[in-house]
Image (cartoon, rainbow, N blue to C red; front, side, top):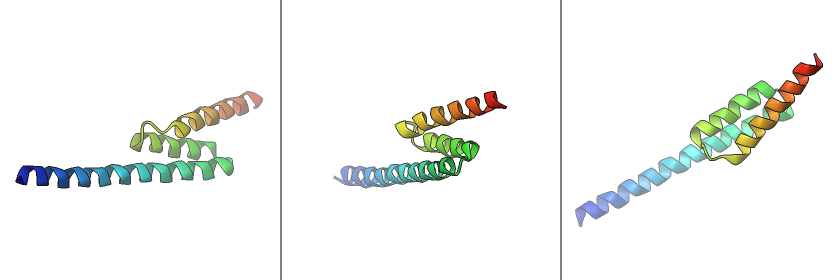
Length: 79
């Protein structure tokens, strides 16, 4: 029926949008890794937080934020 056809079309569009959001989250994650490797912890954390806005289940972003914050805290103790 026409309703089923419309639903299938909408479902495909939503899947595409969801995939785009996840890909954008992954792009932010990769940017965070680059900042981390450049020892720019603040920017890395910002990128990983943006990853979680787009993909709240991104486990690597969650663990990398914790790791970077831990490093920041150790650096503050050394000062």
